[in-house]
Length: 276
Image (cartoon, rainbow, N blue to C red; front, top):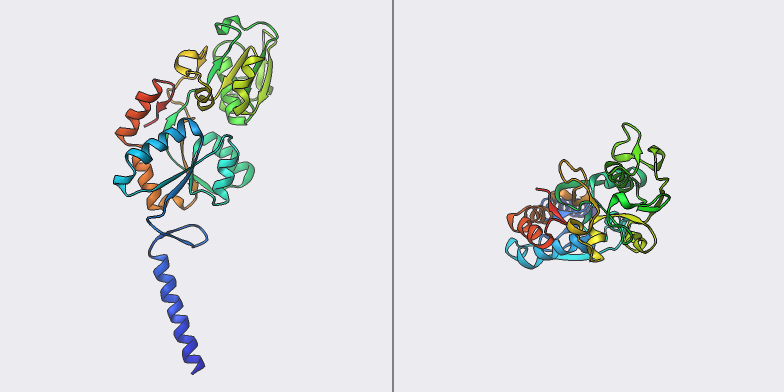
């Protein structure tokens, strides 16, 4: 009798387990996620949060998608929150930065399709043109490796420094082979760069932080990154396996819609560019 009861319970458990696996989406622990649950997305406030809010308020309901937005003001917490399953997906980074994070921290993440580009720009409250940057001036750049490489390449493209051949997007200050004005390159956390404009002669600022502080990259930047063939487009990132979540698929479709492209063009007037 006990053996028969045990066999019956085991069979029932197997059926329930198979049913659970064949129904709703699940995370990598096997925990089922209801298909109508809100998709929790971590974003930088600008422009990522604004773009997602547009999707949530104008497109998501008709697609049967619920969205919860969690805002982060730095570049460290969104990946940590994704790894710790506090959010389902994040939208704040480009592939070079993601690759650095994966290599350094072992994240098992997957990048989806490019959504938008925020051109990196050089700004100043002290000079009117790149050529006016004085000798031995302080130039502030981001301190995370991928964005510092972008910044150094922007400075090199505008004649302030020269980088060794082949330095590419991973350039560091050690790759500077000529610095004719003896500029003092100071690396700061990206979110702090707008504040450095009161002290530095020039600051190379990520597009989202520039916009948040009232700067308009298309008109205020003394130099602006070229958008053509730019590898730094921002995109959705999920825990590997999360790309099969039907809610993520819906969000991907909406983010690459004509409506979102028009919203980006109309709202940011060239300061943010659609990458699709």
